[in-house]
Length: 331
Image 1 (cartoon, rainbow, N blue to C red):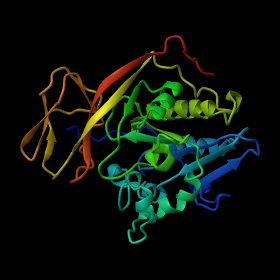
Image 2 (image 1 turned 45 degrees about the vertical axis):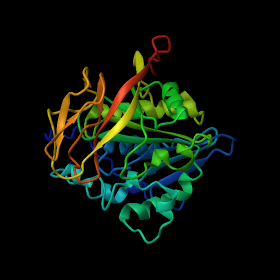
Image 3 (image 1 turned 120 degrees about the vertical axis):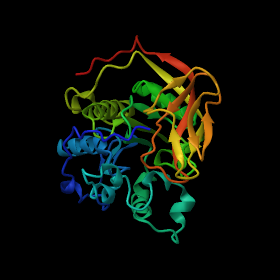
Image 4 (image 1 turned 60 degrees about the horizontal axis):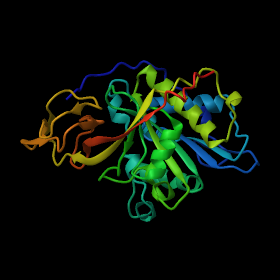
């Protein structure tokens, strides 16, 4: 498996200026237009070492972006993990006690006998998130891979992803056995609710191109939600759409049961294996094989290896959406 150290190509923003907010929740800023419309949230730093979202939220706050309709929340989530970032050990700042993106079940948040830095922060942010209609959660990846959308398992998430139009790969999945993600929390993950959410994996954590993806998807998301006009957004944020989007359904996760797991090659993600039965790795000395033809690897990584962690998800392409007639050149 690839364990190379990737270069840090971006400058980390100073977000301390954003600690105080009118919401009363540190680093969570909500602005109300006073005009009817949805409550839209752009969230960064679900993981403390994923800088591209923090750059975008910092830029929007410094530009004093305000909604023309509805409400807009701009948030930095796991600030405690972010504050631990060490360039010598950049992967260690993902979280403090547990993955912030595995605690988003009401029963878990209600259970005050369970404590951690991440649970405390999730409980602090929960009252705001409970009022959000449409969430964009900005993430990045351990390995250098093409960006992708995590749309969840429901049709409404897929539809929102195709309306957004980018990135080119849309992943439909049930999440992780380790715990529930914010994008699947309550109404976001319920078919009967009008609430909706997308998670964008913008690229490798510290590559400059991930910032461009975060800017593009954020700008498009805000316009799609109708809370701002294009003239309100920074010039150059909107990039051309990819010629097509591929809808990929995750059929199963591969979960480590011990520290004895290795891949057959230095996979980084979106590799496709034509034949069922291809060995892609070994778990406790036993071969892990592709279960069907044209199996795609989704976000393989051993950087956070421990028992119970999903080391890769396996998927198949369900649909390809042609976008050549809906290209946007950007401003």
